[in-house]
Length: 139
Image 1 (cartoon, helix red, strand yellow):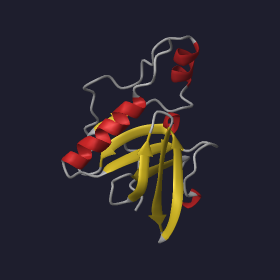
Image 2 (image 1 turned 135 degrees about the vertical axis):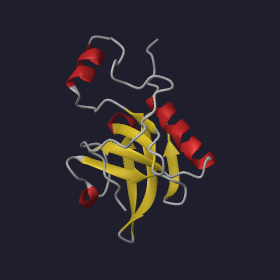
Image 3 (image 1 turned 45 degrees about the vertical axis):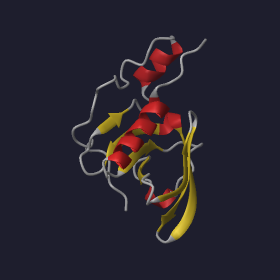
Protein backbone atom coordinates (compact mmCIF):
# COMPACT_ATOMS: atom_id res chain seq x y z
CA UNK A 1 0.00 0.00 0.00
CA UNK A 2 1.42 3.39 -0.97
CA UNK A 3 1.40 6.25 1.49
CA UNK A 4 -0.87 9.18 0.58
CA UNK A 5 0.44 12.71 0.75
CA UNK A 6 -0.54 14.73 3.81
CA UNK A 7 -0.61 17.94 1.73
CA UNK A 8 -4.35 17.95 0.82
CA UNK A 9 -5.25 17.24 4.45
CA UNK A 10 -3.07 20.11 5.67
CA UNK A 11 -4.53 22.48 3.07
CA UNK A 12 -8.07 21.58 4.16
CA UNK A 13 -7.10 21.93 7.84
CA UNK A 14 -5.63 25.43 7.40
CA UNK A 15 -8.70 26.50 5.39
CA UNK A 16 -10.99 25.25 8.15
CA UNK A 17 -8.84 26.82 10.86
CA UNK A 18 -8.93 30.16 9.02
CA UNK A 19 -12.74 29.98 8.72
CA UNK A 20 -13.10 29.17 12.43
CA UNK A 21 -10.91 32.15 13.37
CA UNK A 22 -12.24 34.73 10.91
CA UNK A 23 -9.01 34.68 8.87
CA UNK A 24 -8.45 34.65 5.10
CA UNK A 25 -6.73 31.54 3.65
CA UNK A 26 -4.30 32.25 0.80
CA UNK A 27 -2.96 29.49 -1.41
CA UNK A 28 0.50 29.83 -3.03
CA UNK A 29 0.75 27.87 -6.28
CA UNK A 30 3.61 27.04 -8.66
CA UNK A 31 1.91 27.22 -12.06
CA UNK A 32 2.45 24.22 -14.34
CA UNK A 33 0.77 22.98 -17.55
CA UNK A 34 -2.04 21.27 -15.58
CA UNK A 35 -2.84 24.39 -13.53
CA UNK A 36 -5.81 26.48 -14.71
CA UNK A 37 -5.46 30.00 -13.32
CA UNK A 38 -5.77 33.47 -14.89
CA UNK A 39 -2.43 33.97 -16.66
CA UNK A 40 -2.54 37.74 -16.16
CA UNK A 41 -2.01 37.24 -12.42
CA UNK A 42 0.90 34.80 -12.64
CA UNK A 43 4.25 36.31 -11.62
CA UNK A 44 7.53 34.41 -11.86
CA UNK A 45 5.61 31.20 -12.48
CA UNK A 46 3.62 31.52 -9.25
CA UNK A 47 0.25 32.84 -8.16
CA UNK A 48 -1.31 33.50 -4.75
CA UNK A 49 -5.05 32.87 -4.52
CA UNK A 50 -7.59 33.90 -1.90
CA UNK A 51 -9.55 30.70 -1.21
CA UNK A 52 -11.92 32.08 1.43
CA UNK A 53 -15.65 31.29 1.19
CA UNK A 54 -16.37 34.95 0.36
CA UNK A 55 -13.86 35.00 -2.53
CA UNK A 56 -14.72 31.64 -4.09
CA UNK A 57 -17.75 29.74 -5.27
CA UNK A 58 -18.05 25.94 -5.31
CA UNK A 59 -14.69 25.43 -3.59
CA UNK A 60 -13.67 21.77 -3.48
CA UNK A 61 -10.41 20.43 -2.10
CA UNK A 62 -9.96 16.73 -2.71
CA UNK A 63 -6.79 14.65 -2.61
CA UNK A 64 -5.79 15.52 -6.19
CA UNK A 65 -7.29 18.95 -7.04
CA UNK A 66 -8.40 22.29 -5.64
CA UNK A 67 -11.20 23.70 -7.78
CA UNK A 68 -13.40 26.77 -7.53
CA UNK A 69 -14.88 29.70 -9.41
CA UNK A 70 -13.74 33.23 -8.56
CA UNK A 71 -13.87 36.72 -9.99
CA UNK A 72 -10.72 38.29 -11.41
CA UNK A 73 -11.05 41.92 -12.55
CA UNK A 74 -14.82 41.47 -12.48
CA UNK A 75 -14.82 38.38 -14.70
CA UNK A 76 -15.84 34.98 -13.30
CA UNK A 77 -13.25 32.28 -14.03
CA UNK A 78 -12.86 28.63 -13.15
CA UNK A 79 -9.67 27.74 -11.29
CA UNK A 80 -8.18 24.24 -11.04
CA UNK A 81 -4.95 23.58 -9.16
CA UNK A 82 -3.39 20.14 -8.80
CA UNK A 83 -2.41 19.46 -5.18
CA UNK A 84 1.17 18.87 -6.33
CA UNK A 85 1.40 22.50 -7.52
CA UNK A 86 0.57 23.93 -4.07
CA UNK A 87 3.67 25.42 -2.45
CA UNK A 88 1.97 27.02 0.56
CA UNK A 89 -1.21 27.77 2.48
CA UNK A 90 -1.33 30.58 5.03
CA UNK A 91 -3.62 33.03 6.80
CA UNK A 92 -3.35 36.48 5.20
CA UNK A 93 -3.71 38.31 8.50
CA UNK A 94 -1.17 36.37 10.55
CA UNK A 95 1.04 34.53 8.06
CA UNK A 96 0.52 31.25 9.96
CA UNK A 97 0.35 28.20 7.74
CA UNK A 98 2.47 25.65 5.91
CA UNK A 99 4.93 25.78 3.06
CA UNK A 100 5.64 22.77 0.88
CA UNK A 101 8.46 21.68 -1.41
CA UNK A 102 8.14 23.15 -4.88
CA UNK A 103 7.06 20.56 -7.48
CA UNK A 104 10.28 21.01 -9.45
CA UNK A 105 12.51 21.01 -6.36
CA UNK A 106 15.36 18.59 -7.22
CA UNK A 107 15.72 17.44 -3.60
CA UNK A 108 12.02 16.56 -3.41
CA UNK A 109 12.16 14.83 -6.81
CA UNK A 110 15.16 12.77 -5.70
CA UNK A 111 13.49 11.82 -2.42
CA UNK A 112 10.24 10.77 -4.12
CA UNK A 113 12.04 8.81 -6.87
CA UNK A 114 14.09 6.89 -4.30
CA UNK A 115 11.03 6.09 -2.21
CA UNK A 116 12.26 8.22 0.70
CA UNK A 117 9.96 10.54 2.59
CA UNK A 118 10.00 14.20 1.58
CA UNK A 119 12.51 15.66 4.03
CA UNK A 120 11.65 19.25 3.05
CA UNK A 121 7.91 18.87 3.61
CA UNK A 122 6.09 20.18 6.66
CA UNK A 123 6.01 18.25 9.87
CA UNK A 124 3.06 18.32 12.22
CA UNK A 125 3.26 21.50 14.27
CA UNK A 126 5.46 23.41 11.79
CA UNK A 127 4.15 26.89 11.15
CA UNK A 128 5.18 29.75 8.98
CA UNK A 129 5.38 32.84 11.14
CA UNK A 130 5.87 35.22 8.21
CA UNK A 131 4.86 34.95 4.60
CA UNK A 132 7.83 33.97 2.46
CA UNK A 133 9.30 37.03 0.78
CA UNK A 134 8.79 35.63 -2.73
CA UNK A 135 4.99 35.48 -2.37
CA UNK A 136 2.75 38.41 -3.24
CA UNK A 137 -0.84 39.16 -2.37
CA UNK A 138 -2.90 39.39 -5.58
CA UNK A 139 -6.14 41.32 -5.24
